[in-house]
Every structure is written in C-alpha cells, then in structure tokens.
Image (cartoon, rainbow, N blue to C red; front, side, top):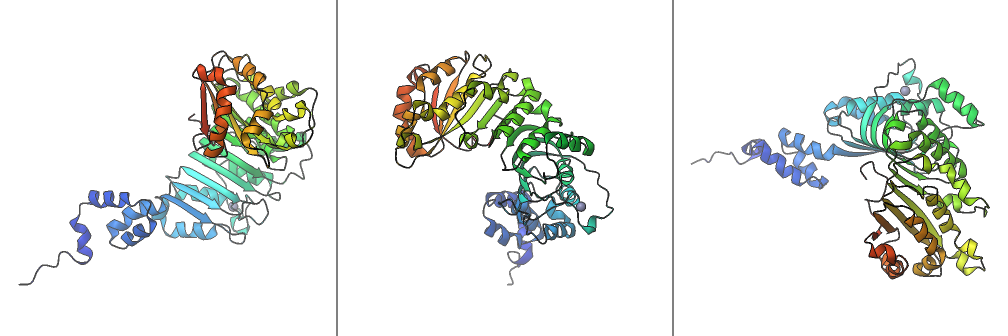
Length: 432
Ligand SMILES: [Zn+2]
C-alpha cells in the first residue's frame, strides 16, 4: 500500500499551527544561523524568522557610497523595513571627513520605511548634506519619536544647517545620548555669531528629550550643542542629564542648560576628569563651580560624580592641596547644593589610573574623608551614598575595608552601598 506523503516537502509546515511555529522560532531569537536555515522552510516560516533576523540590524557604511545600498535594498523589499526595531548605522569611530554620510532626505526615507524603529544608533556617521540626486527635492521633516537615539557623528567639514536639519527629524526621545556631534565652526568665531546663525536657520525646537547624555569633542561643538538644546522643547521635558565636560566652556554651557531646565531636573551625572587634568590650582575653586548652576535645580534628587584618581601626586613630592585636588573639586561641586533638601542619592564613581600604588592606597591618600562626611551630612534627606568602582570586582574587594572604615557612620545608618559599575549606572537614564 502506498503511504500518503504528508510528512515530506512543503506541506510539512502546514501541519503545525502558526502559533506553534512562532513559539518555536521565538525560542531561536538569538541564533541567527538556525533562523536563516528556518527561513528557507516555507513562506510562513520566512515571515516568522524575518521578525527576529531583522529586529536589530547593523549596517556598515563606507565613505564612497554612504548607506545608499541599504536604502535601495529597503526600497525594493518594503516588507523588511517593517521588522526593524533597532538600527545601527556604523561608520568610522574617529572624527574625520572619511565617515560615511547620510543626508536629511535619506534619513527621512529610512524612518518612513521603518515604522517600528524605536532605537537608532548613528555611530561614526557624517551629516554631510545632499548630493546632486536631491537637487530641488523638498524637505518636510515629520519628527519621529524614539526610545533611544545615540549619536557619535558629524565632521568638521559638515555644514551647520545640514546638522540642524538632521536634528529636525527627532520628536519625543526618551534617551538622547549625544556622545559626539561635530560640524564646521571655522565660520563661527564666537558665540554671538553662532547664536545669530541658529536663530536665522531656526532651532530644532520640536525636539523633546527626557534624558540627555552630552559627551565632549575637542571642538566648540559640545558647548554649542548645549546651547542648541536650550532652544528646544527639551527644557520642559528633561529630567536627567549626564555630562562629560572636557573644558570650562562646556561646563558653563551645561550650566546654562541646567538653569533653563530648573525644577524639572531630577538626576545629574558629571564627569570632569578631562577638565581637571592639567588644570591650574585656582584660588576661587568653590566659586567657579557655581557655573554649573546646580542651585537652580531645586528638585535634584540624585547626583553622580566621577573621580579619576592616579598615583602621581603620591610618587612626587606634593603638597596636601595637590594630593587632594580631584577630591576637593568634586566636593566643591557637591557643596554648591549642600543645603538641598531634595537630594536623596549621591553616587561617587571611582576610576583608577595608578601605576605603582594599589588602588586602596591611592584612594586613602587622595580623599578628604572628613570633608566628604561633612558635605554629605549637609543633605538632610539623604537616603543612599553609593560608591561605584569602574575597574571591576577585584578593585572593589580591595577597597571595601577602607570604605567601611572611613564611611562607617553612613554604613551604620544603612545608607552606604558599594558596587561595581554595570549597565544600571551607565548611561544616564530617564527611568532612574
Ligand atoms: Zn538629500
């Protein structure tokens, strides 16, 4: 007798209910090789696997063609874009005009073809403006909302107007991490000229970020980007800022933005290691940190600061003032809000660059423990003091006995937490 051939060929997949196929394929979500094999089984399996294969997509561009190939691919296969929820456009990490570029029209096209896109990572991409193909093409940006946008982008030949046009594409962004953004500033000799250009072109006022990370670049753009943000709706929506400031102009610009945000700001993280490096010992230290204008944020609930400690001051013959220099500056920052009743959480992140001394020795000698206690005691409603080690569990273990000894009053009150750095602490989040 001839057996019916129902266990072979294309009819096989139709034996399984679609929910079962979906569940099985869901289990394979991290296994791209198996997903690819499954996608060849049948049309039904193809749709289910595509959801996982394209959900998070990385496209590497090159300086000659940018991302044109990817755009053409999406145009000819419109179903693919529907699955993409996370997209990373990747180019050159180092700032150069060799970064692949994308124009405002291309970016707008991408957003239209990916209606479910929630997370966008522009990593080493230029905003170099349009080429001949865009000639006469209208630009009517429809701002898109995102869960997260990360930017390491631009170049020092990119036009400011093109950079602004890219920023006009973003609407409500929960996490806006601008680690680097660069454009040509040689035609903007001072803040006055920049301000006039910004008003002439029109700021990207529609942008409303909720948590903002501002990294530094060795150009005036980091400070100028803070200035741009002051003219967006973000001043009404930002609750968290993380700033890595490499110079006093950036610190001042961050302060102006914080003043405009004022009562809405709840969380602030600051890394001024690059500013303090090579800094002269000033006489008016406490005064100069008022530039950050922390005192204009009356509802600040948590503050986190990074201390980069090295053993140079211990090796050389140095005065106590020099030895405690980093710590003094950090405490001076905290002391600008010392009478805050809103402050609940203070986090101090320790990073070590010690060559000869063990981290615990460097920590013991570089900290003004008595003043740290005094400054922290100024916060009447403090709930946690978190000490975070960025160099891993070994350093934490080595330094813990010292911290328990020096911070015993906070430990006894149940306020002290000692942790290693993890994803929870970085980057700054609107969900803190
Ligand atoms: Zn264009």
